[in-house]
Image 1 (spheres, helix red, strand yellow):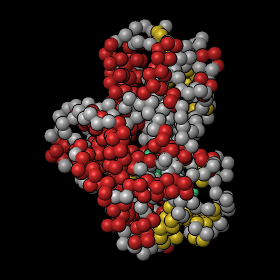
Image 2 (tube, helix red, strand yellow):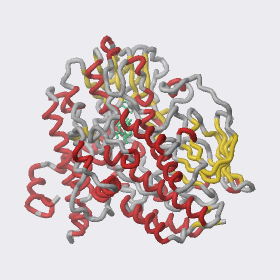
Image 3 (cartoon, protein in one colour):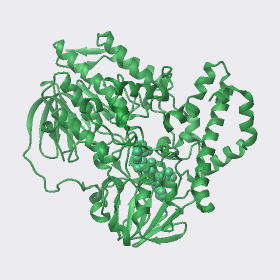
Image 4 (cartoon, protein in one colour):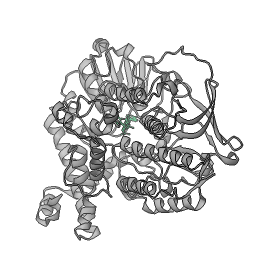
Length: 605
Ligand code: NDP
């Protein structure tokens, strides 16, 4: 970044690169992928593919008696959001807690996503959110999925949450009962749970999707989505060893963060692997390494929160200055150089247009390095050319991997690049792409998830007077801090709307959980049984957060489509954005609100 504070360095970059040609190529590549149907190109798995939603990890014959009870707090969702909320509620003295999850255990994302190679992309020392509490030591800087899942289970055990959990259970109706001052939640196992407080934290990327392809119902081979990996078919486990694929032709559709992690294992074991690509991901260096046990032992109490904050400050537009970079990885490096440079230049007194120009140059430089790495690793120049991404770095979710690109050097691996068109259809025996049919025995869908902001999952929530949350949010979300909404007393929802969003998602979940526990504890201490939001407090927050919203409309319009920009149909309602002041400022707002102690904006009765 300092290079950009020096004009000679900047002009050197400009003369070496044909910036105009690169930008024109980005728009050309975007145009190849823009389509009128946007998110409509996808379908969920209900109907013809319902069976693909079955839980391969749980007992399909599980039964239990319905639970009818009254509890203090009900948490819907047993991923890290729910676990953190329940753990903090326990610490706040709430003993009567119930948890519901459709999965067969805690873990959320890490329960479902057990595909080989799955691992956290944010450093495990800050991603696994309760390491100090559970006393676990991640084995690697970027731990694999089984270890992260085990951490979720460890939180469940540590806070005695297993006895509270109703697994393999879906909430079907959530309704506020004014007379009882309770949320009444019904489930598909005939439970009826009355709860004074309700936390809904059911994830954002939990509903697998498939492209709506011609012939999709005709395919007769074996197929599954990456979030329901069929180890009975492939052999092996989350760490690899897919021995049953030795005589199989396997196709994988999708080269996002999931595809990038799964491909190296498929490449290692399949007789023949076809990787169907519409848009290549950016694949930076991972440099994973084993945990230095001596270093870990030397960490002082409070280290984890400090490390999370240090990371957050370094990746947040509102982060306070840090003198050291504790995590020091691809995220802090690239966000500093590419995303935060505009602010730094503005702070250094440079005009806005100049700061913008330099930020664009820094991005192009980063992408040139990503493309250069493809050339260094991939031997076949035509394959290398197809694996090079042409878009601005943060148009898509950045990936980091040290074996993905290398997989394409194997004779048994074929990159089927579709020149931005995507797979065209399926036959009984294979995949049509690039005008050719590729026969496969097994087809794996790494095609991602419905982004919850696009299509809402889970039961409808009926608040005071029967108003639904969907109706209340019809023209945009209405919340206080993204967590509470007037007319929905004692309810806390964890989503991305109007809250801080940070690269390390579990950090924000931890902050939200602490906030919920504080409100519950304080309202109980003040003798209140119902907590709602005052209208003016909600309006004030909506105005504040909408004013701070950074929609980056122009940026996303120029991006290649994906779920980040609503498949090219960019959303423009500032009420449905996350808190634009940045995650560090958002956390500070919550902390200040708590230390003020007045529960401002809350109506207690
Ligand atoms: P994504 O939505 O990111 O990727 C879906 C992939 O399917 C894209 O490559 C997409 O291509 C491709 N695709 C869709 N339709 C077609 C088609 N018709 N033909 C060919 N290809 C098609 O899903 P992921 O599961 O990869 O990732 C979702 C998110 O989950 C990530 O962004 C990340 O937030 C999280 N994640 C995190 C991980 C971690 O932390 N380690 C690991 C994995 C996931 P196109 O790009 O052209 O749309």
